[in-house]
Length: 547
Image (spheres, rainbow, N blue to C red):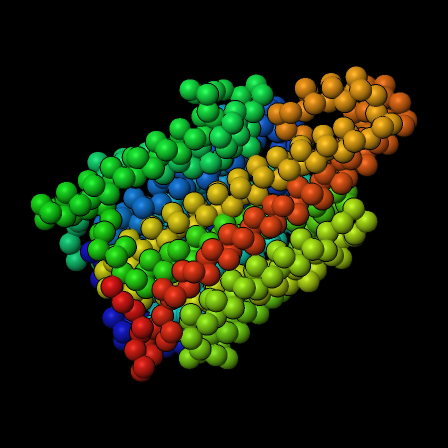
């Protein structure tokens, strides 16, 4: 394994040399996270530029998530083999090549190569290495602050993504976002020479079978989750494929879970034979580590669900521009950064369990407040307080969870922890987005069709046609989009207005239920907070970890 830098080689504080190290790692986290949100406001423009459909661009985004999810654990192992800094820098080079390829992509296949594959491979090398490099460059008592800042950089990138994408697309071109990523990557490579990392003490063997099984299992499961919007969770949507009377998503998720089970059995077999596994399963029996990973999962599930719902409300329901949507999401960044930086700085001995519990409660409260406040006549200002609460909760969790997971295991396992941790966060993000999206569309469809059916102004023939045509899912459309479609169909003024009113009500119903599900999921997460230690890593009172 790679040996961690000696204590004498570590920066003594978070300023000076340590500050440059932190900026380098935080910049890497920022760029990785930016891709998950920066193009959400520009999908239609990107599709037109590369000669494909919106579905094609959504497929590229899905492929990017899949590549990261399936390669994250092997990527962490690569860091243990060749050195964390070297893996980090190689990942940056691969990612930079992917960004450059994306910036000049003339068509969808080239976009898939650059954005989905090369950037995904680069991220799978970079993200686990960041976790290990923070642990290797900062003393144990400094790590909560360092992890908080790095995690905050990623979360802020997600929050700023729509604003950055909106500005670039409106005034320049979406391609300049990826050119900017190349410039940032070059700066990171220059600064990365200051990051401390020792040479591998030995070269561990690669568990090829385990890598294939983990990649296949996670890939199939995540793909099934991400296809639920189009195919349905259990009952196939009209026009969607059907396997033995059920949605393919059910079978894909079951197959993924089965392959992951086989992966665990294979890893146990290797450990019984005293051969080196891809993941040391004894880590997962560590109460503190499993608690930290579980909370990462719930954090990203709620976080990405909110990031999916709120921009839809602002940009579609209210018709705000990409720039205005990004500005309205900014309050989240303010409280996120304040909590991520301020808690370790001003409350260095605070109980991690207390901070995580309060942070999760703040995220739940934000979802509940927004759910209660949404209505057909509310404006953009209704999102301000909920986003402040969600940002506060995200920052609180970011300030603690990274240090909780890494401090739970011996130093030479930090790279492995990084791979597992980022796999868990990608799973949470994928499931959160898919859960919020599919439930929102299902409720939207039901509410819209019920409103149409109860409206006496709409003829029975139109009601029957609507039920048949829209039973597969009502698209989340703005009033202008629906009005244009109704005008093209030659609908009467009375029927058109009834449809517009039904659409407005159904949109709010869908958003409310999606937020309710996210809040309910957060309440489930509260049951796992007890696994978080009550004292800070390195505290004189003890680490509070357990196995």
